[in-house]
Length: 301
Picture 1 (cartoon, rainbow, N blue to C red):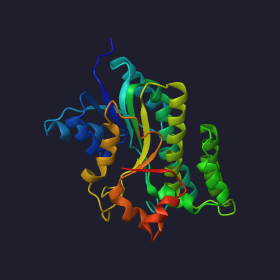
Picture 2 (cartoon, rainbow, N blue to C red; picture 1 turned 90 degrees about the vertical axis):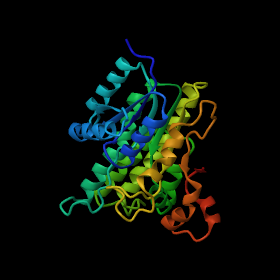
Picture 3 (cartoon, rainbow, N blue to C red; picture 1 turned 30 degrees about the horizontal axis):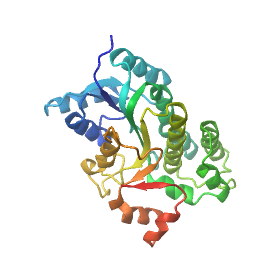
């Protein structure tokens, strides 16, 4: 018999942003908090660390690259809670220059598989479980804006379309990987950074899923957004980031804990207003006014 408890879940949470977000959710969320990780040992060690701080997260294994793992988590949530109230898709990889033996085509395939397809598969399996008033947060990056800004006008138009379907988006992401493998990506108008491409895919996916929620679950008050936490000092972000993990989770926490009467944001790419200078530098912009002409719709908070 499922419990009546609320439950929040964070993917890729044994370290970095995910770990710090679980810590703060344990303090502020009025329900159970699930810490998930691909590696069971590391995930359980992270839970033990938080328990030593007097917090009580729960652990469940989750590999976003493994559909069977995602479905096992789905079944657990159904049996234990009957649904989910907060879902934060934080799991991801940054493989650029991570290994001299990793070819660029392999980097593209692995990055898109984990960051885009992994997030999409988690949403496919868990979104039907999100209860009325639920919150969904997908981790994206302004690096995706930079990549899209420098892609061909034809590709920009496709990604920016208000009517793009999930199937069309998947086709675009798969075509990027295939074009990299076939060494024709520059001819077809792609910019090559694979991390940024995977993250613009997440931003577009989020707008599509929000549109579907509006159509299929109108009145349920579910808010789903993508966001960028900024450049954070983590194992993935490196030591040069201008934010600590504690600062980086603020936007994730804000969106995860939007009050019950909130009407938005929904289906947006959310960025903190105090990161304008960093966004301008990231995108090579000189004027604040140029932020209004970016190749994507941004919601500043």
